[in-house]
Amino acid sequence: METLQSRIVVDGLIYPEGIRWAQDKVWFSDMFARRVYAHDPRTGETEVVAETDDLPSGLGFLPDGRLLIATMRDRKLLRLDPEGLTTVADLSSVSDLLNDMVVDARGRAYMDFYIRGGGGLILVEPDGGWRIVADDMTSPNGLAVTDEGRTLVVNDLGANRILAFDIAEDGGLSGRRTFADLGDCSPDGLCLDADGGAWVGQPFQGRFRRIVEGGEVTHEIAYGAKWGIAPVLGGPDRRSLFLCTAEISLEAIQRLMCDPTDARTQSRGWIEVVDSIQTPGAGRP
Image 1 (spheres, rainbow, N blue to C red):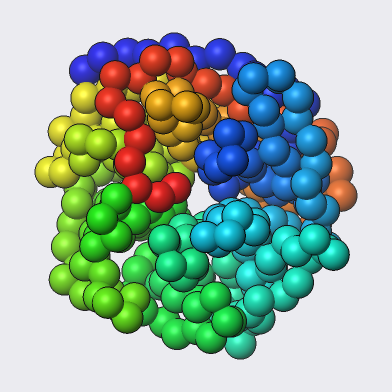
Image 2: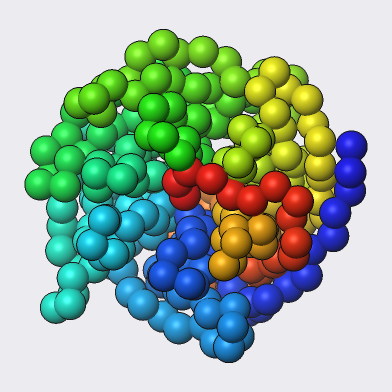
């Protein structure tokens, strides 16, 4: 296993999530700040692109470049239009909490949701129509779609495993299987590379790992007490691994989900990067 080191490129955050690479920038949610940012690695500038009433988490992009945002507690899929935020779908009737998202080449958003006792995946069409496409999961988190758009890969954090599904022409999922059993390690955010490897955040273990199908670990970025939350491969050649990290406790994040007003005193977050990754990113995000 090869060990890598990262460096900080964005400081002063509270709890970054939902990191994406699009339009030559790194996009991410600062969940408890209720903001979405875009960071330009060429200039080092970071700008607020959206402010939400609720906690933003998963991000994605439509084929025309418009940003989609998943809000956690009010369970909405929002779209950033030129005139402001628009609600695409209200999913409060089917879920207790929304989290991550990946958007395929047709603009269909796959979103993970939680309900008491478990969770699953919802598919939201660009027109706002939605349906549940997978259930019977413990706590899904972190999604990716392969380059050809035929496979969806998703973490099941509470079950310590990564799952894969076949994607049908209509967006439905079938052929559920285990991509990797992670033993006692809990996976969070996820992205894929061109050799079929999955970069996975393991917050409770304080690291990121590259895992190939079957479970072999090839690379690791270890932080100790700092959480490794979510990765994305970006940059001009998709060989820059951008990472969401934070210093926070599990007890603090549970409190802040209910009341984030004093979040800055309980959590510190960063965007970090590992340059010149050997295998470039592939698929979405």
